[in-house]
Image (cartoon, rainbow, N blue to C red; front, side, top):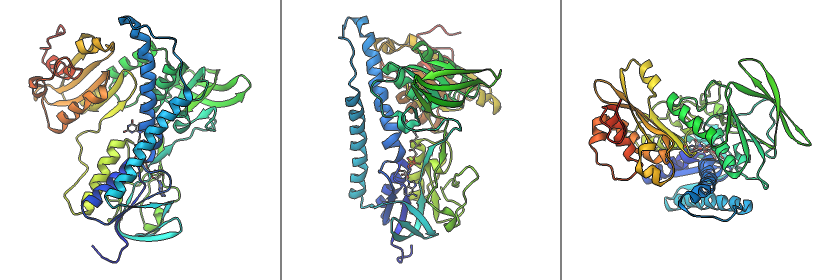
Length: 467
Ligand SMILES: Cc1cc2nc3c(=O)[nH]c(=O)nc-3n(C[C@H](O)[C@H](O)[C@H](O)COP(=O)(O)OP(=O)(O)OC[C@H]3O[C@@H](n4cnc5c(N)ncnc54)[C@H](O)[C@@H]3O)c2cc1C
């Protein structure tokens, strides 16, 4: 590596992708800087994964408290201190972003503050200073997609960032435009806080990409909790009036239009890659029509010493994918034989029950020509789920018929996100359903549903009648 550069590696963006890349590069002995124009931690820590999960937890406790009378716990009337809720959530964010800053210091990553933009393929301007680097990693992330007719003002009409500030009083009527992961997490939060929530989705099904059976069970559970769901429906425009936000909804199948009134409208119709202010063209870096900076499996862009990771590089826009790609980019720069070659990237909706999946859906497996057998174990038959008062959902395992290889696992249920890690490992290790069935799982645990799901694929589950 040439000594004449200011840094061996300059990372642009300190989100999950960027801070993983910077820390790993430093661990590998590279002189590293990371430029960030807002707060370290990126979307995930500041306005994404972490604050949503905090609000989801608070809402779940509130909902669970209502069921405590089943076992004799009589709680006084519920009162939510909204200012305290927002403050508690912000405190977690602060602690974690402070943690990232601390890790930068401990690993001797130079934190450059300001907007970073390319001057040429080895030079980046940050604020009013310029720095040179042998390798540069683009980790600028993504931002909410907009919808014509629904102007986000972060008051009545909000995007995910605006929706993270719980208003006082909690809105009586809430509309979530977009039935994806973010739309449903907020629907669940607001529903648990007492709002009457409606979710509309343009496509014929919610949570696109998830297994059809899992989505069906998930939707049923959300509706049981009071969330209204309308598919093949779009919002044309919204108008603020004295009595609320009037939204024109249209059934895209029949063309039928109606106006409904809400107190808060969330626009959660996807995210788009972010390269504003970056000037990638000055470095000769290719940006696609949709705004992505594409990379190969070693995270290299079309300019070999410039890398791209995380949301700005490709879908799926998930923190753990960004983190992994950050490690790969740093290791490739350090000359290690690293590559992004995951068998599958897990996906999770952190509602209650959660929806979590990894690998192929039943339909995808069939479309790829696999002959499959299906394992299915309902949480209604799980002793642990009963003790937690959370028996909605199941583990569905998609298994190749002849080889017994696990192709995909789809879970609707309590703590599905945590159970899923075993499924991810199974896929990466090329495990068969027999491998999972022969593994002793602690009893009573929710994870046993994986064991019984695998047994069920062999029609040998113990706690259900096998058909
Ligand atoms: C509401 C919500 C909930 C989510 N929940 C989850 C979840 O539970 N699990 C999950 O896996 N994912 C979740 N995500 C997605 C997750 O947040 C992203 O996938 C992840 O943050 C992507 O990481 P990244 O490093 O690619 O980019 P980002 O986190 O977007 O970080 C990019 C950083 O780069 C900075 N930046 C951009 N341009 C410049 C520039 N020119 N100069 C300097 N700095 C710049 C930005 O300020 C930002 O801090 C959620 C997202 C949202 C919105």
